[in-house]
Image (cartoon, each protein chain N blue to C red):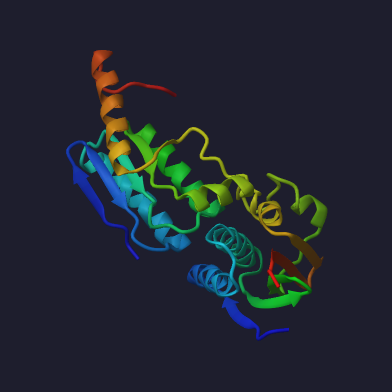
Length: 130
Length: 136
């Protein structure tokens, strides 16, 4: 099942609606990375509120999305990880290290706005954070 | 032993089916929603291992009672290449497939009982259980 990707200003919002297969997750990764370029997006939000399980493949794919988007100049934030899902992830040893997270969509947007503000205060468009 | 629910694993969509069936069964057996998620995550890992290493196999789900405990039993079987070194495969970060190497050890942490029997060239069976106390 394809994940709808909305464009809102400089941001892309991927809102996962139902359980995803590995192929669906890989497709989401390709689509997001392509659209970061096509829409010159500065931020990506992946909303996982509807996911009732995150296993190692899902976490690896989200991490890849965040790292690839950053290489393309966009900041990613994962929003909506449910409490039970967070518990199981920690038990599995899955950390999402190096990936920004926020409680929900609203917090995610606020996070990206703050990042954008920091960038403009620094005076340069895109920053290289390695 | 209660009825066994058998889910053939041959494609990535079967991994989703297996973990959803596992969650449903855990819910029916009275597990908390936290435990349902834990069970579903563990099933997802071992079902994906079948796909990755053996291409096909099956996951069997059942509910058992043991005194004042009720348990959900997950058995994942395949006739794949088998695991050469089971104790290494249970170490965090060890993978022969380029994955994170957290599937087997992670599933073991999520469940209460965990057993792997494997013979090279013949296949692998992972049996795992999660228990909950039933008030008399």
